[in-house]
Length: 158
Image (cartoon, helix red, strand yellow):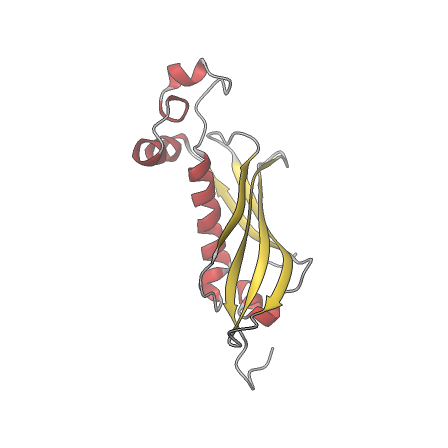
């Protein structure tokens, strides 16, 4: 696995089968509750007493918060150093285990497929799975989607 974002600037730098470690993020209770109050104020995200009575037996992060934390790592460690041209969308998002205060999330970007655009020769598509696990190695969420990356300019060395 590589941790050098500059290694993945252009479409041609990605190959099927690559696994790129994009770092860690420690989760705090304050951010879980703040995010949920703004965007997903369900009781098991914001209320200790109510959350204790649920199947989660305590406050957990919103799945959307987990996705936002994943996105931050992808942007900071990969996209902002690349020729990213955005994404045409996601195929699936799965929340497999609760994320709790005190967890440390680890994100791996798995390249499943790469294909050059047939209609726009200046770009290609990278199909990927983002897989985030907690400090115990348990996968807590996955995102499957695609990103568009610019092609390496003619004459620029790899």
